[in-house]
Length: 227
Ligand SMILES: CSCCC(=O)C(=O)COP(=O)(O)O
Ligand SMILES: [Mg+2]
Image (cartoon, rainbow, N blue to C red; front, side, top):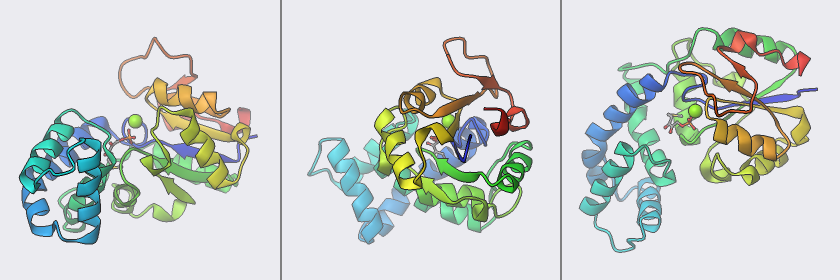
């Protein structure tokens, strides 16, 4: 019996185009100024040090870090330091109403149904927890943050590592066999399945013929009571 559902964001609840054509360019355009103006802030400094460590450049200057970060954005690297900074930069865009977090129309009705069934709802994304809360807090459908019992980012580990899903199960306090992970990426679902979770793959665009996971086109086709 499924007792909690953990969902990915990009390509699952939300359109990849929104992330790549709205969020990423917004952060890229403001990155240099944001880093120069805020590098002494404790959280910004921690993110920049994480990038220094990740890029094996402990002495990197601010300007070198800005170049590295822009390269990371361009290659869609799931760098925790970059993800933390993106979340900080996106805040102004959401708060000022420049965009709202995209949600496919099938998502909210399913969340509401599952919540009524007593199923716990959680998020696991490469985007920082702060960025996740912004996307759902300023979503197309309003503030949905109260729907979720918890949020996880790569602080628990990478999304393609089975250990990350073991850690999440432990933090939620439920057995892996009672957990369902939703994602568009079959390598993430492979890792969750290796940790003993149930999995469903969202196919929002082209079919994924390399996947061994149950596939659906939208959330209305997901029936946790039948798993
Ligand atoms: C949560 S905010 C935007 C998403 C993002 O930055 C990202 O890298 C998407 O990763 P996901 O794990 O949700 O596919
Ligand atoms: Mg995804």
